[in-house]
Length: 218
Image 1 (cartoon, rainbow, N blue to C red):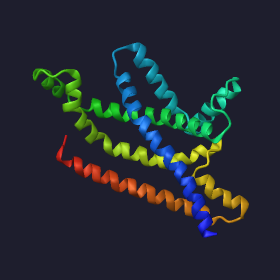
Image 2 (image 1 turned 180 degrees about the vertical axis):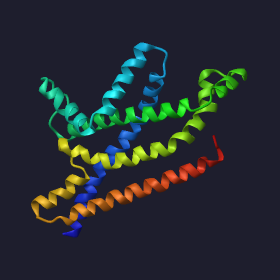
Image 3 (image 1 turned 45 degrees about the vertical axis):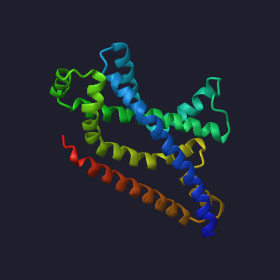
Image 4 (image 1 turned 135 degrees about the horizontal axis):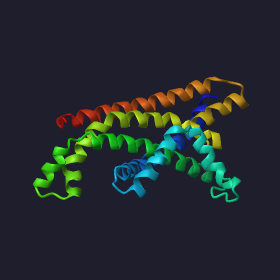
């Protein structure tokens, strides 16, 4: 039984890991783009993006998952289909939008925390705005945002369990299935071990990243 449970949980964890990694792959750059948009002087860009962030931050991720997956079908255009791939893509879309908005606020806080004098110094040196951002600002922003980013990313590990609401077979779903089929609860505690180990590894990773950036104090 232990081997069967472990194999099933590993399959569920593979789906959880895929959702986690793909969410980061798309939401980190999208979050940066959104943050730059909210700081733009173009009102047609700034206000809609700020409104989107307000909506996403003010509503539960669980609700967003349900709306994104079920909404198109209710309106007569089921773009996701009913198979496992469609459900996974819908979950991924919800996670990317949600976390991109949260990441955008972290990026914005990091960028706006940089003293204006550093931008002016770059201009005096004849650097373009792009060069100033890449060569002067970016490293300082990264140093500032690593701790809050680490918190959000570790939260993402646990939030992936919400994908089960649209029947995505992930780690919690795998553990719960044994409670329903075999009447045993210990696999649920076993799933907790997976989350603890994964979160622990990420904590160690981010601690090392912070130490690597200690040379650049801002």
